Length: 105
Image 1: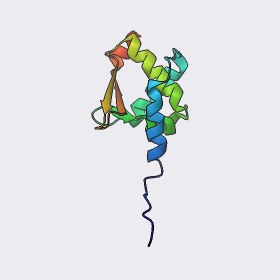
Image 2: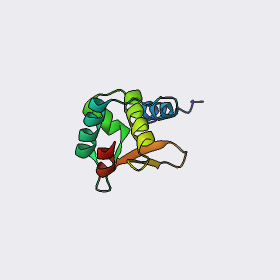
Image 3: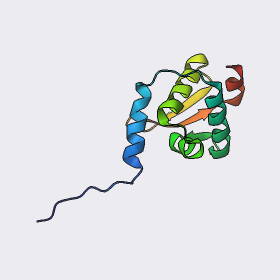
């Protein structure tokens, strides 16, 4: 009798674990990281202006906790600056920046 082997996409567990860390990270106020994230967001955004954390990481090589910290700080500074898209399990998957609101922070 053979065992059932569950296969997943190679990046799926890494991304899933990284998204759970968003709740644990404290806000980071760093203008240079925010500038890099905004420029990467402009390069990788979809037509609806959403992008994933993975695409920001691959573009900038900023570790996930720092990306989460900067976005959390931006969201606390101005709740209208960042919009999040949540999948059916309640995990944050995509985010959207509103440039006019980001400029106010």
